[in-house]
Amino acid sequence: MATRKLAPVHPGEVLQLEFLEPLGLSQNRLALGIGVPARRINEIVLGKRRVSADTALRLGRYFDTTPQFWLGLQTDFDLDVVSDELGDRLDREVHAPKAAT
View 1 (cartoon, rainbow, N blue to C red):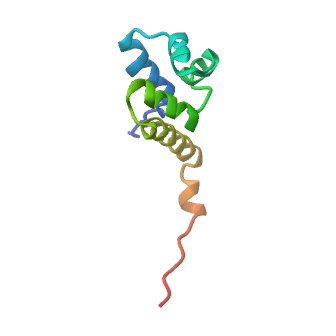
View 2 (view 1 turned 60 degrees about the vertical axis):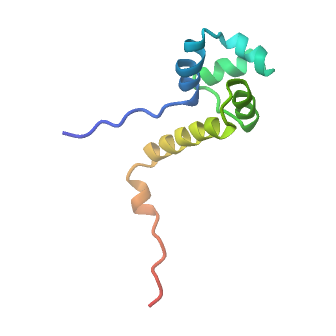
View 3 (view 1 turned 135 degrees about the vertical axis):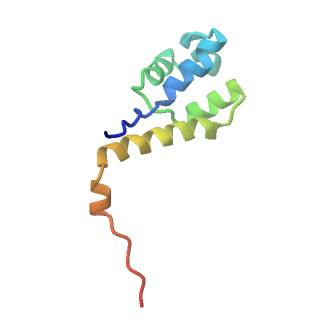
């Protein structure tokens, strides 16, 4: 039986489930609070937009987290997605140089 891999977690899912919902905060209120268009927050929550450095700085300040937290979530998501896309091809296509003897 093959092990099923969990789908990559987009930072927008973390934003919604770990920050907005527990705090009773709407996407619009967050957007107003960090000075960005509401559409930006909505697209991040829906997984249609990446968390940029600008947004990470704003979210970090607003939620008293680090911007690295938000960018780390984005980087982890990106790596998971590309790793899933590449699959076994990575092992077949990339070969480290052999050490000189």
